[in-house]
Image 1: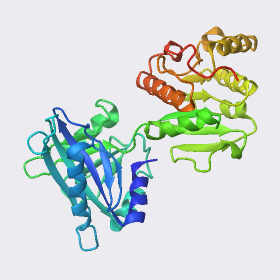
Image 2: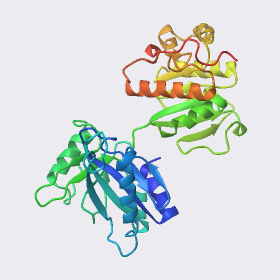
Image 3: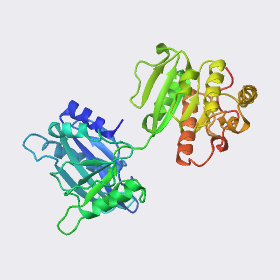
Image 4: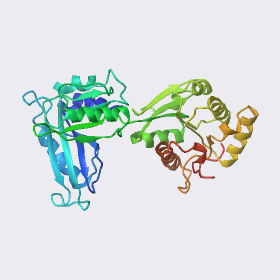
Length: 359
């Protein structure tokens, strides 16, 4: 879910929300540039690192909430600098610049419309730190607006062409120009297909809530899913899990956690026949892996593709077979692989006897 959807929901629920964003972080600081949270009269979502900095930022955001009405200026923004050691007594001792953006029902329509015409995962959001101007979103490195300073246009071209990292950054303005802040419009997520809504599947979906995975959650009956599906997961009910796997997006992560060895085998066979799986994890023991490799080989899967099957799943050394422990271990493994895409799934460390035994 893009942050704009969160903002719209907060405005609908509270009338006014302040988005608090770190736009510059120098030295030792609790969080990096781009870390953000949303503050309303009674709620806080997200974090800029906790501690005295965050408490001070929340207090300042709530003083701004009173200005978020029809008499206040549109697109009101405020910038504060914090020397974490001298002013806040934090041991990290760095310096942080924080942007406070007041968003009301007046701004709601523009926020809701952002990025409808472009690829949200490629797009970047930009606006001046000075208030009064609506934010812009673009995914076109050739686009230019007269209101954009030359330094901003050049930076955008580098970011969108791949010459510069796609990350949050502050672009200095000229003598008479405000600095501008550029950030990815949406966090990059990885597509994850999770087959099975049993105990481990439910625990894993819960653990993945704040991690960069967009989860397609698949099982054979609606009754197998919990009543409330979190927003980062989409439930799919099908009588043919193997066919669903065959139609999945390419270069995706897959975790096979169903209640049936026969279903597990059919899904793995379907995925390994494709040859474009980023990661295929199968719950079970080393013995289960041996049996599956033998059967899949008999079904015509080549040795090179068989090596993609990871079973058991999870990182070694964590111990425990409780669903929550397995979920934490597997989530950590997924994050590790997503951060190192050049490593083959078969090269990832696995716990030989840590995952569930054959059922």
